[in-house]
Length: 130
Image (cartoon, rainbow, N blue to C red):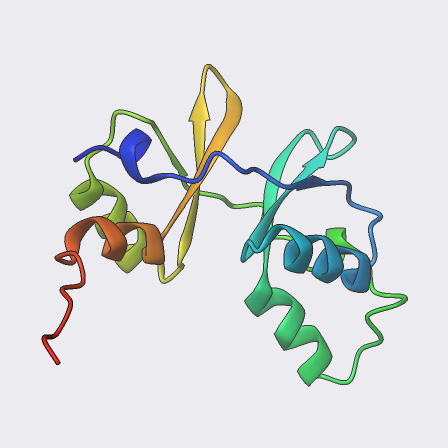
């Protein structure tokens, strides 16, 4: 199975000046665990995850004043839609992260998460007879 078959095409894109509270609210509303941060001034695409927000709050930082750019991972490993799920899982395991931005023609077209991969690899739930 390929990344294109497992990825979520719901790509939440935010700007670098969004507060962490704004980012968290948008992520919650869309039911996603990561947002693509597009920063044209910094020249690229980064990712802000629920873990980044959790770490900031855990340090006592104010989510109403902390900005996404200060917590964005910019050294991003991108996946291609034609990668296999084994390649994507290997990249995640090697890098120690749970989300990959999927680029097609240089543009983000999806995000694949560990949960997406597990969903594809795990057998469908079977009803247990009563």
